[in-house]
Figure 1 (cartoon, each protein chain N blue to C red):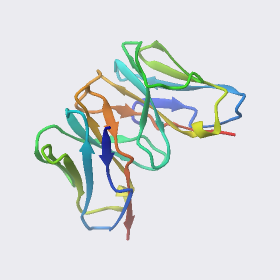
Figure 2 (tube, helix red, strand yellow; figure 1 turned 135 degrees about the vertical axis):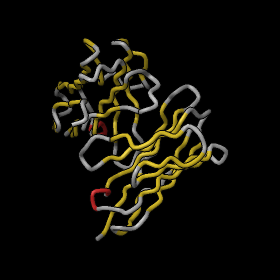
Figure 3 (cartoon, each protein chain N blue to C red; figure 1 turned 90 degrees about the horizontal axis):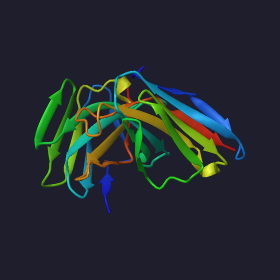
Figure 4 (cartoon, one colour; figure 1 turned 180 degrees about the vertical axis):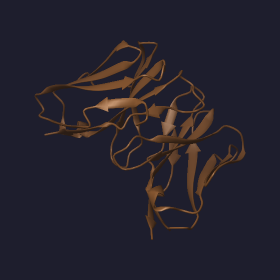
Length: 114
Length: 109
């Protein structure tokens, strides 16, 4: 357990479904991130929140919608996904945006879109 | 464009030493990270280099040469539990974290 908890660990959804991924940290960190990890590809940064404010959206399709209700929780709402969206979605947190000790990652949600 | 290159896969023997290389071309440099990721688990922080030279931490060491755009992770006295993917990542001049695709390390008895 890293201190960053993601649920669910696995999710299978149809292209017309709506689901949400949840990330929770009680490390007192102020920055939280969503990453997409596909096989044999570099991690892709999707969204960044700093002090609950979204500071980055890396050209992510609107079928992915983030929400950060407080500094401990981060959600990724999913709707009308495509099969190519199947991947491991990782949440991470850090004390601030430029930590020399790196990010703390959750174990991820393995998403399969059918 | 910004790019980080590392081998896709490496194989080594238990008890041996292995060196995983990482070369980068980025717009500026503010530091380089190595992470370890076991299958199905979270990436975990291993090391951070911002100055040239070797940083040693137990069985793991990380080296950086900023002039060559090059780093390596050295793992000594390999154990079966070291089988994992090793991710190299660089902070560019805007503190954007640029990631490599990772090196899958397979340890054989």
